[in-house]
Length: 298
Image (cartoon, rainbow, N blue to C red; front, top):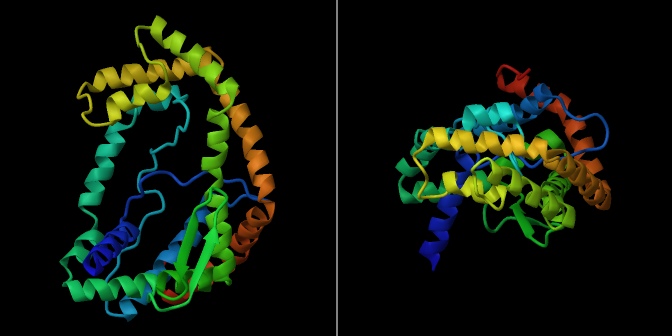
Protein backbone atom coordinates (compact mmCIF):
# COMPACT_ATOMS: atom_id res chain seq x y z
CA UNK A 1 0.00 0.00 0.00
CA UNK A 2 2.82 2.43 0.89
CA UNK A 3 4.55 1.70 -2.41
CA UNK A 4 1.33 2.35 -4.35
CA UNK A 5 0.90 5.71 -2.61
CA UNK A 6 4.51 6.65 -3.37
CA UNK A 7 4.16 5.70 -7.04
CA UNK A 8 0.93 7.67 -7.31
CA UNK A 9 2.63 10.73 -5.84
CA UNK A 10 5.53 10.32 -8.27
CA UNK A 11 3.09 10.29 -11.17
CA UNK A 12 1.57 13.45 -9.72
CA UNK A 13 4.99 15.07 -9.56
CA UNK A 14 5.69 14.26 -13.20
CA UNK A 15 2.32 15.65 -14.18
CA UNK A 16 2.96 18.88 -12.29
CA UNK A 17 6.32 19.33 -13.94
CA UNK A 18 5.14 18.41 -17.44
CA UNK A 19 5.79 21.18 -19.91
CA UNK A 20 2.59 20.58 -21.83
CA UNK A 21 -0.86 20.66 -20.28
CA UNK A 22 -3.59 18.24 -21.31
CA UNK A 23 -5.84 20.96 -22.53
CA UNK A 24 -6.57 24.64 -22.57
CA UNK A 25 -7.42 26.37 -19.32
CA UNK A 26 -11.14 26.59 -18.59
CA UNK A 27 -12.58 29.92 -19.78
CA UNK A 28 -13.42 32.32 -16.99
CA UNK A 29 -15.05 35.71 -16.60
CA UNK A 30 -13.78 37.81 -13.73
CA UNK A 31 -15.06 41.11 -12.44
CA UNK A 32 -13.29 44.22 -13.64
CA UNK A 33 -10.95 44.49 -16.58
CA UNK A 34 -9.72 41.04 -17.68
CA UNK A 35 -5.99 40.45 -17.60
CA UNK A 36 -4.18 41.01 -20.87
CA UNK A 37 -2.13 38.21 -22.38
CA UNK A 38 1.16 39.88 -21.30
CA UNK A 39 -0.20 40.18 -17.74
CA UNK A 40 -1.14 36.50 -17.70
CA UNK A 41 2.33 35.65 -18.96
CA UNK A 42 3.88 37.84 -16.26
CA UNK A 43 2.06 36.06 -13.44
CA UNK A 44 2.81 32.66 -14.90
CA UNK A 45 6.49 33.43 -15.42
CA UNK A 46 6.88 34.83 -11.91
CA UNK A 47 5.32 31.74 -10.33
CA UNK A 48 7.49 29.48 -12.48
CA UNK A 49 10.68 31.35 -11.61
CA UNK A 50 9.93 31.43 -7.89
CA UNK A 51 9.10 27.73 -7.85
CA UNK A 52 12.23 26.91 -9.79
CA UNK A 53 14.40 29.06 -7.51
CA UNK A 54 12.93 27.33 -4.45
CA UNK A 55 13.58 23.88 -5.92
CA UNK A 56 17.16 24.85 -6.75
CA UNK A 57 17.67 26.09 -3.19
CA UNK A 58 16.82 22.55 -2.08
CA UNK A 59 19.21 20.94 -4.54
CA UNK A 60 16.82 20.06 -7.38
CA UNK A 61 16.73 21.19 -10.98
CA UNK A 62 13.57 22.46 -12.63
CA UNK A 63 12.71 23.88 -16.03
CA UNK A 64 10.01 26.48 -16.54
CA UNK A 65 6.68 25.28 -17.92
CA UNK A 66 5.23 27.36 -20.80
CA UNK A 67 1.75 28.71 -20.16
CA UNK A 68 0.71 27.96 -23.73
CA UNK A 69 3.23 25.54 -25.25
CA UNK A 70 0.95 25.00 -28.26
CA UNK A 71 -0.67 28.36 -29.12
CA UNK A 72 -2.60 26.78 -31.98
CA UNK A 73 -4.42 24.46 -29.57
CA UNK A 74 -8.08 25.39 -29.26
CA UNK A 75 -10.93 24.27 -27.05
CA UNK A 76 -14.20 23.44 -28.85
CA UNK A 77 -16.44 22.04 -26.10
CA UNK A 78 -19.52 21.52 -28.26
CA UNK A 79 -18.68 21.69 -31.94
CA UNK A 80 -15.82 22.93 -34.10
CA UNK A 81 -17.07 26.20 -35.55
CA UNK A 82 -13.85 27.76 -36.83
CA UNK A 83 -13.63 26.82 -40.50
CA UNK A 84 -10.10 28.14 -40.97
CA UNK A 85 -8.82 26.25 -37.93
CA UNK A 86 -10.53 23.06 -39.11
CA UNK A 87 -8.96 23.42 -42.56
CA UNK A 88 -5.51 23.57 -40.95
CA UNK A 89 -5.86 21.09 -38.08
CA UNK A 90 -8.88 18.91 -38.76
CA UNK A 91 -9.85 17.62 -35.33
CA UNK A 92 -6.40 18.39 -33.94
CA UNK A 93 -4.62 15.08 -34.47
CA UNK A 94 -1.54 17.03 -35.57
CA UNK A 95 -1.65 19.01 -32.32
CA UNK A 96 -2.06 15.82 -30.29
CA UNK A 97 0.99 14.36 -32.02
CA UNK A 98 3.04 17.47 -31.24
CA UNK A 99 1.86 17.37 -27.63
CA UNK A 100 3.04 13.77 -27.30
CA UNK A 101 6.40 14.70 -28.81
CA UNK A 102 6.88 17.56 -26.37
CA UNK A 103 5.93 15.38 -23.44
CA UNK A 104 8.45 12.74 -24.45
CA UNK A 105 11.16 15.41 -24.61
CA UNK A 106 10.09 17.13 -21.38
CA UNK A 107 13.29 17.84 -19.38
CA UNK A 108 11.39 17.90 -16.07
CA UNK A 109 9.99 14.43 -16.64
CA UNK A 110 13.35 13.08 -17.77
CA UNK A 111 15.13 14.64 -14.81
CA UNK A 112 12.65 13.38 -12.22
CA UNK A 113 12.64 9.85 -13.60
CA UNK A 114 16.46 9.83 -13.49
CA UNK A 115 16.52 10.46 -9.73
CA UNK A 116 16.95 7.60 -7.24
CA UNK A 117 13.70 6.68 -5.44
CA UNK A 118 14.73 8.42 -2.22
CA UNK A 119 15.46 11.65 -4.09
CA UNK A 120 12.18 11.36 -5.99
CA UNK A 121 10.37 11.21 -2.66
CA UNK A 122 12.29 14.23 -1.38
CA UNK A 123 11.61 16.15 -4.60
CA UNK A 124 7.89 15.47 -4.21
CA UNK A 125 7.88 16.87 -0.70
CA UNK A 126 9.97 19.86 -1.74
CA UNK A 127 7.60 20.76 -4.57
CA UNK A 128 4.23 19.81 -3.08
CA UNK A 129 4.88 20.00 0.67
CA UNK A 130 5.29 17.57 3.54
CA UNK A 131 2.35 15.31 4.27
CA UNK A 132 2.61 16.33 7.92
CA UNK A 133 2.23 20.04 7.10
CA UNK A 134 -0.96 22.07 7.35
CA UNK A 135 -3.45 21.31 4.59
CA UNK A 136 -5.92 23.57 2.79
CA UNK A 137 -9.18 22.06 1.56
CA UNK A 138 -11.92 23.49 -0.65
CA UNK A 139 -15.14 21.85 -1.76
CA UNK A 140 -15.84 23.05 -5.29
CA UNK A 141 -19.31 23.64 -6.76
CA UNK A 142 -19.16 20.33 -8.63
CA UNK A 143 -18.81 18.47 -5.32
CA UNK A 144 -15.08 17.71 -5.51
CA UNK A 145 -12.86 18.32 -2.48
CA UNK A 146 -9.58 19.91 -3.53
CA UNK A 147 -6.57 19.74 -1.22
CA UNK A 148 -3.32 21.64 -1.03
CA UNK A 149 -0.45 21.32 1.44
CA UNK A 150 0.43 24.80 2.62
CA UNK A 151 4.21 24.43 2.46
CA UNK A 152 6.34 23.32 -0.47
CA UNK A 153 7.75 25.36 -3.32
CA UNK A 154 4.49 25.61 -5.27
CA UNK A 155 2.58 27.01 -2.30
CA UNK A 156 5.45 29.30 -1.30
CA UNK A 157 5.59 30.79 -4.80
CA UNK A 158 1.84 31.41 -4.87
CA UNK A 159 1.90 32.91 -1.38
CA UNK A 160 4.62 35.34 -2.42
CA UNK A 161 2.85 36.39 -5.61
CA UNK A 162 -0.79 36.46 -4.51
CA UNK A 163 -0.30 37.41 -0.87
CA UNK A 164 -2.93 35.04 0.56
CA UNK A 165 -2.48 31.37 -0.33
CA UNK A 166 -5.71 30.22 1.29
CA UNK A 167 -7.81 32.82 -0.53
CA UNK A 168 -6.02 32.14 -3.82
CA UNK A 169 -6.45 28.39 -3.54
CA UNK A 170 -10.14 28.72 -2.76
CA UNK A 171 -10.82 31.26 -5.51
CA UNK A 172 -9.00 29.32 -8.21
CA UNK A 173 -10.45 25.96 -7.16
CA UNK A 174 -13.99 27.33 -7.33
CA UNK A 175 -13.68 29.40 -10.49
CA UNK A 176 -11.79 26.72 -12.41
CA UNK A 177 -14.67 24.31 -11.79
CA UNK A 178 -17.39 26.55 -13.19
CA UNK A 179 -16.84 25.99 -16.91
CA UNK A 180 -17.58 22.27 -16.61
CA UNK A 181 -20.84 23.13 -14.84
CA UNK A 182 -22.11 25.64 -17.37
CA UNK A 183 -21.11 23.35 -20.22
CA UNK A 184 -23.16 20.58 -18.62
CA UNK A 185 -26.03 23.06 -18.38
CA UNK A 186 -25.71 23.76 -22.10
CA UNK A 187 -25.62 20.12 -23.19
CA UNK A 188 -28.58 19.32 -20.95
CA UNK A 189 -30.72 22.03 -22.51
CA UNK A 190 -33.33 20.95 -25.06
CA UNK A 191 -32.16 23.71 -27.40
CA UNK A 192 -28.76 22.04 -27.54
CA UNK A 193 -30.32 18.74 -28.61
CA UNK A 194 -32.34 20.54 -31.27
CA UNK A 195 -29.20 22.23 -32.60
CA UNK A 196 -27.38 18.89 -32.72
CA UNK A 197 -30.19 17.32 -34.76
CA UNK A 198 -30.04 20.14 -37.30
CA UNK A 199 -26.28 19.80 -37.48
CA UNK A 200 -26.50 16.02 -37.95
CA UNK A 201 -28.95 16.43 -40.84
CA UNK A 202 -26.59 18.91 -42.49
CA UNK A 203 -23.65 16.56 -42.10
CA UNK A 204 -25.61 13.61 -43.49
CA UNK A 205 -26.58 15.64 -46.55
CA UNK A 206 -22.87 16.19 -47.16
CA UNK A 207 -22.09 12.48 -46.87
CA UNK A 208 -20.91 12.45 -43.23
CA UNK A 209 -23.24 10.27 -41.18
CA UNK A 210 -22.62 11.36 -37.58
CA UNK A 211 -25.29 11.86 -34.94
CA UNK A 212 -23.20 14.24 -32.83
CA UNK A 213 -20.04 16.35 -33.14
CA UNK A 214 -18.52 14.20 -30.41
CA UNK A 215 -19.03 11.10 -32.51
CA UNK A 216 -17.24 12.69 -35.45
CA UNK A 217 -14.35 13.79 -33.26
CA UNK A 218 -13.94 10.37 -31.65
CA UNK A 219 -13.68 8.74 -35.06
CA UNK A 220 -10.41 10.57 -35.64
CA UNK A 221 -8.97 11.15 -32.16
CA UNK A 222 -9.79 8.07 -30.09
CA UNK A 223 -7.73 4.94 -30.67
CA UNK A 224 -7.68 3.23 -33.00
CA UNK A 225 -7.51 6.49 -34.89
CA UNK A 226 -7.97 6.88 -38.60
CA UNK A 227 -4.73 7.52 -40.46
CA UNK A 228 -6.63 9.35 -43.20
CA UNK A 229 -5.56 12.92 -42.57
CA UNK A 230 -7.34 14.41 -45.63
CA UNK A 231 -10.59 12.76 -44.56
CA UNK A 232 -10.16 14.14 -41.05
CA UNK A 233 -9.78 17.66 -42.42
CA UNK A 234 -12.74 17.30 -44.80
CA UNK A 235 -14.96 16.06 -41.99
CA UNK A 236 -13.90 18.80 -39.59
CA UNK A 237 -14.45 21.51 -42.21
CA UNK A 238 -17.91 20.11 -42.94
CA UNK A 239 -18.62 20.12 -39.20
CA UNK A 240 -17.66 23.78 -38.91
CA UNK A 241 -19.62 24.77 -42.01
CA UNK A 242 -22.72 22.94 -40.76
CA UNK A 243 -22.31 24.54 -37.34
CA UNK A 244 -22.68 27.92 -39.04
CA UNK A 245 -25.22 27.13 -41.74
CA UNK A 246 -27.67 25.53 -39.28
CA UNK A 247 -27.32 28.29 -36.69
CA UNK A 248 -25.82 25.85 -34.20
CA UNK A 249 -22.77 27.97 -33.49
CA UNK A 250 -24.81 31.10 -32.79
CA UNK A 251 -27.34 29.24 -30.66
CA UNK A 252 -24.71 27.52 -28.53
CA UNK A 253 -22.69 30.67 -27.94
CA UNK A 254 -25.91 32.33 -26.75
CA UNK A 255 -26.76 29.35 -24.53
CA UNK A 256 -23.27 29.23 -23.05
CA UNK A 257 -23.36 32.93 -22.22
CA UNK A 258 -26.72 32.47 -20.47
CA UNK A 259 -25.47 29.64 -18.29
CA UNK A 260 -22.04 31.19 -17.75
CA UNK A 261 -23.65 34.29 -16.30
CA UNK A 262 -25.84 32.16 -14.04
CA UNK A 263 -22.99 30.01 -12.74
CA UNK A 264 -20.54 32.85 -12.19
CA UNK A 265 -23.26 34.87 -10.50
CA UNK A 266 -23.78 32.05 -8.02
CA UNK A 267 -20.11 32.28 -7.05
CA UNK A 268 -19.46 35.97 -7.66
CA UNK A 269 -17.52 36.43 -4.44
CA UNK A 270 -14.91 33.88 -5.52
CA UNK A 271 -14.82 35.29 -9.05
CA UNK A 272 -14.23 38.79 -7.68
CA UNK A 273 -11.64 37.55 -5.19
CA UNK A 274 -9.64 35.89 -7.95
CA UNK A 275 -9.74 39.03 -10.08
CA UNK A 276 -8.61 41.17 -7.14
CA UNK A 277 -5.77 38.84 -6.17
CA UNK A 278 -4.54 38.71 -9.76
CA UNK A 279 -4.53 42.50 -10.05
CA UNK A 280 -2.75 42.92 -6.73
CA UNK A 281 -0.21 40.28 -7.75
CA UNK A 282 1.05 42.11 -10.83
CA UNK A 283 3.50 44.46 -9.04
CA UNK A 284 4.70 41.57 -6.88
CA UNK A 285 5.34 39.51 -9.99
CA UNK A 286 7.37 42.36 -11.50
CA UNK A 287 9.38 42.65 -8.30
CA UNK A 288 9.93 38.90 -8.02
CA UNK A 289 11.26 38.61 -11.55
CA UNK A 290 13.51 41.62 -11.04
CA UNK A 291 14.82 40.15 -7.79
CA UNK A 292 15.52 36.77 -9.36
CA UNK A 293 17.15 38.53 -12.29
CA UNK A 294 14.96 37.07 -15.03
CA UNK A 295 13.54 39.01 -17.99
CA UNK A 296 9.91 39.93 -17.39
CA UNK A 297 7.17 38.67 -19.71
CA UNK A 298 5.51 41.31 -21.85
